[in-house]
Length: 444
Image 1: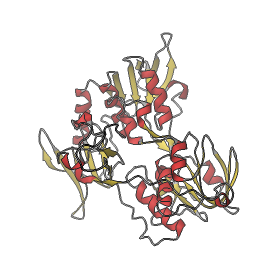
Image 2: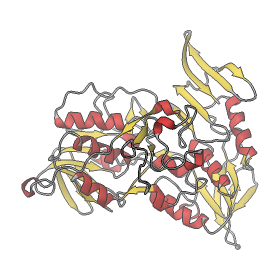
Image 3: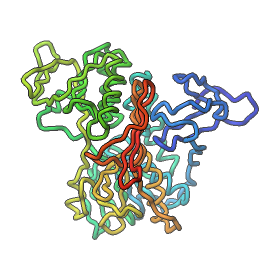
Image 4: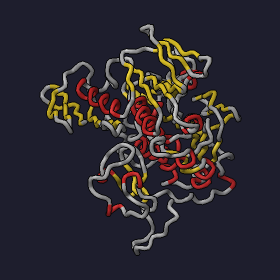
C-alpha cells in the first residue's frame, strides 16, 4: 500500500481487481509505468488505459476489498485440535479457497500445506517483472505467516504431501499425518522438462522462488540468454528479458511461435514484434542436448547439427501435473486431476481440486481467470451454502507481449481454417467458424 495519504477528501485509497488476470490496481500506488502517478483515483483513469499484465481495459476491473482478519478461534476449535479443511498448495488456488471460506465462516478449522514458504504473489507478473524493474521483494505481496494470521488458519510451510488415504480422510505429509473433513488439492503443475535438457544447466520459471534465483543471476549485468520453447510463457519471457537489456535468442520447434494456438498471419505478427525488439528467433529447432563450455557458457546442441551458446538458458517447455499422490490414492487422472465441471469434486469422497492441477473434460485448466470462481464454488459446497456451481468456459487468452499483443477468444480447433476479418498495418482480426457460427476469434 502506498505511503501517500489521501488529501482529496474522497476517503481511503481503494483497490480494484482485474477479472482477467487478478492484478490489483491500488489507487495509492497508481501505475507509474503507464503514466498513472501514485494517488490516481480509479475514476480518473482514462478509458483506454489497459491492465499492465494482461492488457484488458478499465471496464474489466471490479472493486476489491481484502478480507478482514478472521475472528480469533477458541483453543477448543483450533485447526490442529480437530479435523477441518486441509488445503494442499500455497499458490493462488490454495489461498483463494482459504479466502472464500473465511468470507463466510471465521471458525472452521483450516490447515494449508505448502511446499514453499507460502508467500502470496501475483504469478502472471513473473513473465513481465524484469522489464518493469520489479524485485522479488516488490512481487511478494504478503508473507505466508502474515496471510495465515489474517485468515486465522494454520500454515504448514516447507511441507510436502506424500500420501493420501481417501477412505481414512487422512493426508500424510513430511511433518506428520493430518485428518480432514474436506481436502482441497491446489498444488498446481510443474515445468515439463524434456529428457534432452539437463536440469542443472537450465532455469525453469514457474514460481517466485525460482524467479528470485534467476533474478539474482541476471542482476549481475547484461547477458546472452536462450529461451527454449516459443509458447506463451517463452514469448513473454523473451520480450521481458530483452526489455531488461539482455541479448535474447528464442528457440522454437516450429517455423513460427505459438503454432498450436495462432494462425500463420498472427504468428508472423508476433514474430515481427519480437524481432523488432532485437530478439533472435531460431525456428524449426529442437534442442538435443546442453553442455557446459570451458568459458562457463552453455552450449545448446540443435537437432540440425548446429549449436548456439548462451550465458543463461531458460526452459519454457510446458507444464505437467504431478500425478503420484493422486494416482496412488486411486483418484481419476487424465492430464490432470479429473473433476466434475460443476462442483470441482474429484472421484474421491470429500476431495476437491482447482487451478493448474485439474482436468475438465480431458483438458488441463491452466489460467488464472477461473480460479476465483472455482474457489467460491468449493467453499460454498464445503460450507453447505446454496451456490449455482462452477460454469466452465474457455478463458480469454491474452498474450502479454507489448510488441505484438494478441487476444484470443473461444476454443480454436486445430487444423480448422481461419478467416481474415481485417488485416491492416495496425490491426489483424480473424475468426474460426463451424456450422455458420463463430467459435473462436482473435485480435492482434
